[in-house]
Length: 235
Length: 389
Image 1 (cartoon, rainbow over the protein chains, first blue to last red):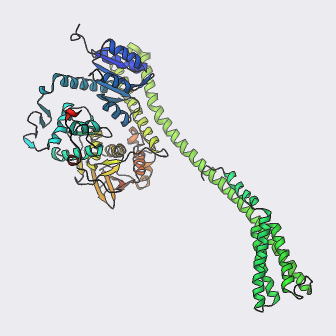
Image 2: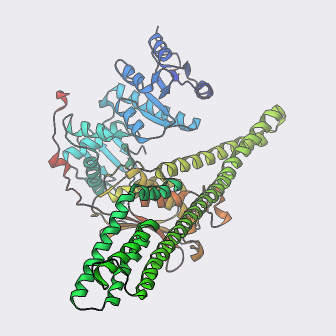
């Protein structure tokens, strides 16, 4: 039995019933199928029973830390994970993203925000699953990244970037709209034994901004998420 | 010493007197007498007249009265009398009183001893009372000040939290009560109001949390090396909605040194300054953001072309919940307070200045400490291949 003709299944893991109910209602209204879990144990049971296409996960659960579920899921699933937290601290966000979550929402959030991030996460995942070769040129506004020819152009004008700078742009482009943490960037550009930290990434991005941005102190393409990392604007 | 109970502080000095034993004090009296006698003997050698020598014992008696208490003061007075009689009056080295005038001298010495010790005791008691009184008064005044501040904050907070809640409750219950009878546009309006007021409440809660964290005894400040240009850029991005279409002039040179700050906090401070500028100046007027380094400090200024800030309000605008005009009833009243807290937690400051040509310039100054590292990521970091993963 294939799920192709069924609407995508979203697993909502949240112990606060009113939040779980309004998220489920919003998802159902948009045509998604929803499975609800109020604890880690329930979530695992549901996920194994029918693997979800996307998981919305609250970090504070009665029987443990939501991050454990991220780890557990990432062992066998590539389904996007949206993490919900009431604490709103950057540390939580970075921890979740570094462990494989796709995005992060701070309570209180509106349904519009949730649905927007859900769409971005599903679209990115679909793009990655289809194979990197499918999109050879990534365009954001006037910026064009030719991933095959390793060329960067702004409008008509070619922009000279170093090999490593291109690697950064490519990594961000692969996840356009999504934030990459400092750690993820260091690993994507330099590999696992980079020996660097956030300040190196900041300096690196600053240099690249000087090349790419019309106004480096008001960037259009390379956006900062303070305390977390960077992302490439979507459009 | 703050928090050390007042009563305990005072009684400890009394305890000191008790600890200094009786023996020690009388011993000290003997010491004073010995010293005075030595000086007197010296003057005697120098052929001073006997009547003048007695004056040498005066300081001893007075000091004994001041430092050693009543008993030792009497002892010293008597001792002085005996020593003077024995050593310096005729007949020498006897205790016989030859000249009745000496009796008067003796009485005077004794009297002085008693008088000084009494006076000193009374003075000490009065000063203790005054200190107690003063300390109590200070504590009372501090408590009153704290209570006043709490009352003001509670009253503002109560109002600012309850008002949106009241709106939400009212709108929500109206929706429930009226049910289907409510016309569509009325329903939409109530729903929109609920969303708006919830967002307002969320902003107030956020601001309060920020302030609470910044007011902690040891606020969590994570200093890392940051690029100034980036701090400005990320704040501008977060304020995009507030700044909307208005012109933003940027004067941020590209070669500023790295600065060791908490990026999240400095971004927060800048966001509040930008929001403030947007709220207080007409839509079409420009906001200017400038970064400059001078005297070992980084100055970030946000300037607007609004009505400016009156001299009387220039300090008050940084107080919690202060609103210069009813126009900013939409704000939380905490933005500038947060900004100042961020500045202070970094050892810096924020002030508002008049702007030539009209408007206000908010100047956030952060100290530049230490040498910023020279970072060259392409050179310094190790590249490894992906297959090693």
